[in-house]
Image (cartoon, rainbow, N blue to C red; front, side):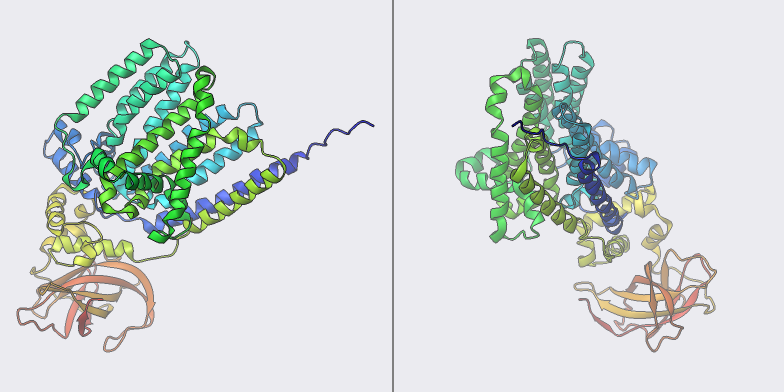
Amino acid sequence: MTERAPIPAPAWRRRVPLALLLAFATVYALATAMSAWRTYTAVPIWDMWGALEFYADVQRGAGWNAWWRLFNEHRLVLAKALFWMEYAWFGGQQVFLIAVNYLLAGCGVLVLSAFLRARLAPLPRSAWAFGTVLLAVWLFSWVQKENLTWAFQSQFFLAQLVPLAGFYCLYRAARGAGSPGWFAAACALGVLSVGTMVNGIMALPMMVLYALVARLGWRRTAVLALLAAACVAAYTVDYAAPAAHGGGVLANLRERPLDMLHYTLIYLGSPFQHFTRHTDAAWLVVARVFGALFVLLALAPLPRALREPRTHRLELALLTFVAYVGGIAFATAGGRLLFGFDSALSSRYTTPTLLAWAALAVLHAPRLAALRGAARAVAATLLVLLLAQMLVVQTRDVKRNDHAHMRMTGALALQMDVKDDRRIGMLIWDPALGTRLARIATPLHAGIFGLPAMAAAEHAVGSRAEALPARCHAFTDLVEILPGEPRFVRVHGGLLPEPAGTLPEAVRLVAADGTVAGYGLPDRWRKRTPPAPATGPTDRYLMFTAYLQVPPSGVLPAVLTLQAPGTACAAPLPLAPAVPAS
């Protein structure tokens, strides 16, 4: 009795997994867009002040030195080009740079998708499409929140993306002698890698290693070796390692080898640690386990690829990139171990590991696609659970928050030389440096400090204001005493502008003698009823935060006049009793 051949599944059933994944990806993309909107700020945050200082130096004629000089241990030439574009072409509002972060993440998807297409060449095109969508979901994960939302972070994408593209070009060059353009592109990308971060100096040496193992020929190997030597030599001229980064790789490897290993494993497994939403020490075993799995998945195909390198050049290219990221993890352990194991879970460090895990997935894609029966069902279940957890992480920042306004008022405090440590501490580690850079940026019209409302804040207090009739309503919610700052208090309140009037870009608080005693910025609209003794209808009020100078007597006035510069709006503003800032 002859056996019947298995009946192939209907075409529509084969399309169901891809359709479901596309539906999930749509929701995922919407959550990502909403999180991006909620976390956007035009204010420089942390290292972005270095970009502002770089732009100011270029505008003052610093020349090539400003482009090549170290930022910590990095020479951020490519990122600085983007910083210059942001301030010179787009007004320094950080929109361009943040958009570039997402664009670079998308470029990572395209490069790995090209690898995947070659890896799954014998399979139906739908398998490649399914894998590409998965790559996109993975590489836009919110576990790398800092790199997606901070304008300064383009180099964290470039330091992996440029070498990855270089390894792909080298693989294409290895496929045949009739493609000299691919080898030239690989060389160019290897050189450009040096201008991403200090990690980038490993790209050309790793390309040399790939050329040797994959049998690219002595001429190409020699060219890559010469470029590697020249670039490393150029990078190390006048190089000085940051003193705060400890003894470095060799010292820590000699004194704390097991800690180096643990840190490296935690670094490599960090995305999965973030998916658990637990980053305390008791849960670090998750990162260690996935770090060990990372190493095993990388080593498993290596023996076969080394035995037949000419037929496994694609796999070797992916493995070379994985080794590149492994080297980054190990080098980071050498410089950051003194900050504790928790530092390996820093959000910005997850971008290289996300790309490396994606490369491993591409490497093992044919085996995953070949799963059948119970193994396929288990793999599908694990994938669904992972995607569900990723969506939870992706929605962490979809709710409205006050961070953008708090950062803007922190910048206002710098501009007005107000010691508001809590809000300034959201922006920069050194208030004095922030104030100095704000003063430099204002005449250059660089970023938010070039906006009229922010530029006027520097000299607003103490100026004279024209008396205006009351035409609006205003109230105060809270007057806060700032720790360590006897000169100013922070005032929170609301303003009801005229219905057809121009919306104010700033508010000023005017004393009875016509002197401007305070200055502030608007926030968002809220439906409010003014608290007594203020008067006004229940309506949508434009909330504001202002800094009010304390009179020499130390006693705040009971009532001020609130004015909105550029409009006819003025209103009496009773002050609430001052309380310590929470």
